[in-house]
Image 1 (cartoon, rainbow, N blue to C red):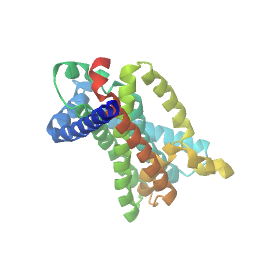
Image 2: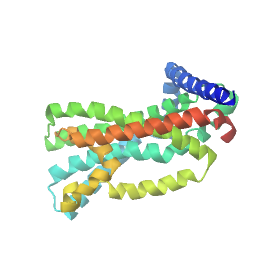
Image 3: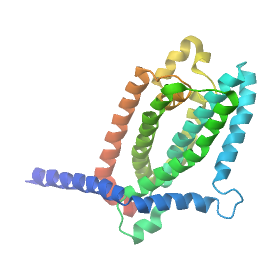
Image 4: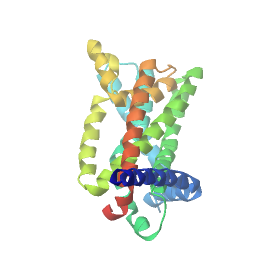
Length: 272
């Protein structure tokens, strides 16, 4: 009898979690507005507003591109597009990892005063990241025009690559946000790890520089996340290995996010 009650309770939590995801998606006008408002608040009364994001990223791409092309003795027209796309995609990945810790704690006033699906805060979080990415992506077109590069039809592969990055970002933010709401030291630990991952992932250097050790990149999940978006924009179709690795990462993220959402969803309001 007790086992039956536990199964019923677990099934009920699963239904509530699915209902939360669907109801949150249907409230898209709300989280779209909240996500855009988050960016406006950050740059309120500034001269360029959100365009500061693009300006600062463009300066970083040009400065680092010139310096590191000299250090690695690489042609600027070859290295600059590689660095530009790498920094753009790493920007969204790293911001999701480092800021997901405040996903629920940052929305404490909403959670305690308004009854909304928790997924609304996940959609809001990812929408603001997509807007920032869209601002910065203008730099890529500038690089194409300046170096007279055309990636061809291979660039279309970047669309599913970006959607997979966004999907994994949303799934990851769910369990990072929950763990961080319970244990407030987690965001600081993740921020430190992300700094190390940046140097271990080929963003500012090419995998070929590792020589015979380039096979080590196979075991770096962030390399595959970056490559499914970067390679098409440089005119190269991602490898089957990249997609298989990303498929496994997506399945693992889905299982983790689903488990946390079903098991701990009801405790979020007590943790924030």
